[in-house]
Image: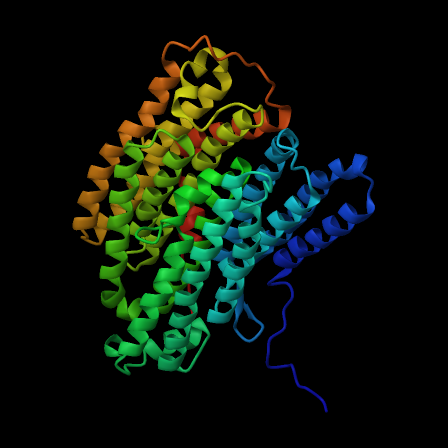
Length: 487
């Protein structure tokens, strides 16, 4: 029996970046098994080399629109945009990891394998044009992150965070799958192109209860991955309990991948019924802004404060999706890139201090940090100012472009909430800066070195936060081009 595969559209070039990342994970796996313990410190270098190769093969996808494998994945500018973003985040994570892992006696090769697995899942999610590939991407990244969250196997809090993430993640996956099943039942298609054709064919899609319920359940699963309220309950506990370097990675990478899928689903697939999904997404954005900013005010644990800050920023990013236009989505993409730089930098500072065995979670530890660690305190100040949206940092333009998109679409209620909550956020971001400037506590005495690679990552992130704030148009142009989705 001969099977004809000519109609599937096999094009390995579309998924070549993902294949390179997976291949690197397999190489690292075998090296971890075969190399003696003394030589396993080469594993980060091999990981970075594989990621650089994946980065190189991602650039040819820019400007393309290549569907492949039965219209389940696509190689286009949006996929290339997120491939570059996610790979850079992973490379920076690998660079700051060895010192932290050695300090906590967690230097195992499995860490880099799981990191590469999560990255491959996120990249697949960004390129997915089918409900099935969306599910595969989410599960691949989720399973890897479940294990990474509990990677500190002797720490009770780490195990607790992994268990909470696993249970709540499985619950959210149930909503996701049920929504996909309802959408398939309503449209008869699992590809986003086929679903889009159904909604624009004048077949009463806006009144199809089965389809609307499916979209609602699908939104729950995607909002969970984006850490958007009210589906955020896992975020502060997991961020606090997971090893800080893992939190650094997942705080920006998971959110980025989730919003890539949200853009493909809502902007490209359901533009004709935007009046139906606008109100639920607007409520999720408003809840995220309220809960994230208000709860962050009372947090004295810096990791939990940044977790609630991430919930609030999910609301800001979601604001750009509400107009249902490419212009609004381009503002969201710019915000995602800006958030990746400044939030990664903030968590990287916490990671750098944590690698020295210091008490970095309590805000009181940061008192007088400017006198003890002037470089770390300076870059942390830059990241806090950017997260607050104070010029000339990139965070200011990120919020400005999203607000401009809402003004152009005449969406006023979420805009008013966002502006008010931005003012509220100044308190807890500037509080960190004030504490670092306060008179130092002489009882705290430590002076461990941060390391060249970590200093380089922190310096690069701080410079990028300022440079992208002074010259935002280049990244905005890339985001605008990537946001031009077509099915």
